[in-house]
Amino acid sequence: MKKGAARFDHYLNQFAELLTLSSKQKNPALWLYQHGARTPLFMLEGLARVYAGLHNKKKFGKLKEQFKVLEDAIGAIDYYDAFAKEFAGDKKIPATIKSYILAQSREKIQSLNEILTEKEWISVDNSRIGKIRKKLAGAEWLSEKDEIERMQVFYTTAVKSLLNSMNEKNFHFDNVEADIHEIRRDLRWLSIYPQALGGCIQLNKAKTTPKYLAKYATKEITGSPFNIMPDAGDCKHFLLLDKSRFYALSWLIAELGKLKDTGLRVVVIEEAILQTTPQGKAGKTAEADALKKTYHLLGPKQPKQQQLLDEAEIICKTYFKEKNLESLITGVATVK
Image 1 (tube, rainbow, N blue to C red):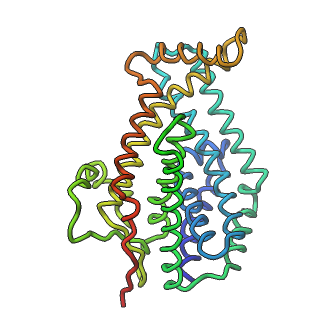
Image 2 (cartoon, rainbow, N blue to C red):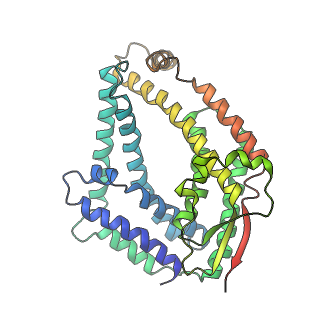
Image 3 (spheres, rainbow, N blue to C red):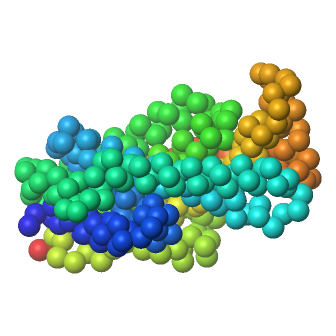
């Protein structure tokens, strides 16, 4: 089996097993969410993104969308469920808001259950998984050497796309969801690919490291399992990434994640207020009132959205002006 096929097979087997187990539960979607199904889906979506860029955009692009629909559905459950749990014991948050958020999490669970059934992810013969395996069996897999060479081009293109996006924004963010979440998502894929690809991407420690990179090598980052590359196994050809700059990438992703999550606390409460309050006012007036009430409920320790956006701009400006992404890829290597 070619390495590309084996990578898909590894995570597809993991997900198929979870699907089989979930099919025996009263609530398959909830069971999948609670038992880590999002992780193999992230890996499968990541693989599909990579291989759509390497050689067969149409075939792997369709697979990517299939995995993304499920991953997005589980992500939607996680979004509301996390806040439902966070606010459950908070006496300052009205019961109507807690009930709304809980109801949304249940609605998202039901939505995933419908997708699992309608798209035949859960069926007697696992027909959706079978169809995917058939597509993968018919793919024209590249040799290991060719894969790595094209992977370097793919990774370089992804980096350039990110840089172009940031230059267009001029490091300016207006919205927590649309801006901070978007740039973080694109950055995050660069750290997911090495995990999904199972050892063919490794970190390379430079002989000399600029002193400014030291600030990114915190204990949280250097000790993270996500920053340890998978075992190389029998791989002979590798794409190499600079270790210190990969740590810097991981740090930026983590910090943007903290800012995003803090900002989304405001977004979800404001949404709940707008959806549970009788419609006496409309448009921007209603939104302004809801936002004011949101900050009152969350208390003085909750940062304003603009403060979070400003902080995101500052750390992104520093990171990108250091040209850390441009120096992330150090080349390819072959082991005989």
